[in-house]
Amino acid sequence: MSSLFINRHQPKTTKAAVTLLGLGLFFLLLNIMFTVVSLRDNPGMSFFELFFATRDSNGHLRGAAIVWAWAPVVLLPLGALFAWIAVRRGARQASN
Image 1 (cartoon, rainbow, N blue to C red):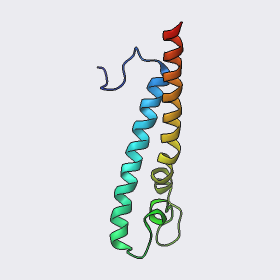
Image 2: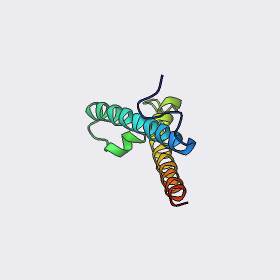
Image 3: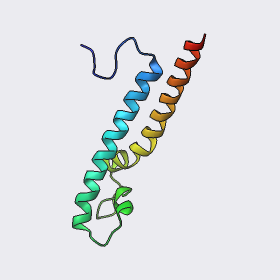
């Protein structure tokens, strides 16, 4: 069964780019959703304070919050880098 975006004939860099960008987008949307809900509960806080918040109301660090807050910051640029590498490699192979 082949995926909508990834097939087995694509280079590994393309597969990695699609995977990283997809995961980064998923976590970005998840964090935006959580931030909007939290803004209703905490009207005095700024969007970005809540967007990057990794501690609960008691000050305890939450592992899941670290993942959904920082995954887009890491995964989206990595995915863009892999996409750039894949395009460059494809252009180089096409010219040879």
